Amino acid sequence: MKIQVGLGLRPCRAVHPGFAVNLLIGYSLFVGLRPALRVADAQSFFASRGLGEEQISYDALQSALGKAFLFSYENPSFPLNLKSVLTLGNINQGILYGKEDKNGRLLYNIKFNYLKILIPLPFKTKIGLSLRERFSQDFDVYSETSGIYYWHITGKGGINSLSLAFAKQIQEVFSLGVAYDYLFGGSEEVWSFETEEQVLTQETIGGCYRGGVWKFTTLGRIKGIQLGAGIEFFRPLKYIGLSGMSGESVQEIRLSPVYNLGIGFSPNEKKHFSFGVTYRDWRKVKLGESIWSTFTNGLLFSLGFSDYLREKYPLRIGYCENFWYLLSRERKRVGESSINFGTSVRIPKYGFFDFSLEIFYRRGRYLKEMGAKLNSSVRFDEVWQKRKRRWGY
Image (cartoon, rainbow, N blue to C red; front, side):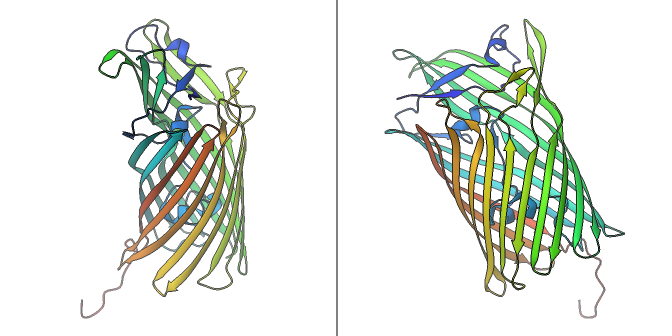
């Protein structure tokens, strides 16, 4: 059995003239999971569609609580009270097993994918600067033809986000935030026509993306209850490709807004419950003047709970049900279920190490993916504080 995975918005800068331009829109790959189990460096087989795999987990703390956007550091209004400079970095590594009938392949990935700094300012304001991956276009697939010949297609790269955020706190219970994300990046695909013994021909195509996103968020607290809402407006995302024969090619991708809602409840200082929803109506996404037929309305539900088993060791548990913005070849929604666990270890005088383990299951009818991700984040929230000199040290 074979799986058809549509080749989405792939760059079109060809090493050999005339190869890439006709591959940009509407091209599909018949992807067969090779019978032999092998390890490849990639993110997901589904990352070869659309804009790639959307990265909705930023750091270990957010991931462990179910990936709710409004209760993450990417929300300009979060946290409600910022008392010191906060610096955050994250390393994500994952292992994934893709299966189709009795055939399977093993994928592994490790990357530094998030960096954030938050700075408190006078008049209860704060600014933030972050760099993260928004979409991953890493993949490694096979397109079987007849007999012993097949295409082997690998993709590398994706779309990144450089964000500048500002927030204003009103009294002690409410915050308004705004951020602008500059989207940029590019990817490269290598198409190899092969047999089991040798590579017959090989072509490389590539290109880049440029765009932006405006975010507007609110976050409020009434006693032990937190409420939040947010919306993201996308400026046209430009896809720029080059071809030896056709020169530069520019396409505009028009994305609809993304909506976020969240509620949190803290019965005491140690326990915390959270629920989040993210909705993106991307059924009418346009590439130029054409509707992008592989896009659908994406929906994410998030549940999170945290408590302390011991005074210094928090326990975090999260559940996420994520319906991707992509459709499979059979016009079925790509769904993903995940359960998350996490904790923190204190770094004396500096901050915390945060850890989360995510176990997930993805399905797109014929193609199934199972795997795990380990997020390791360092969170410095004391190193920049002004300290008083004391006798004895």
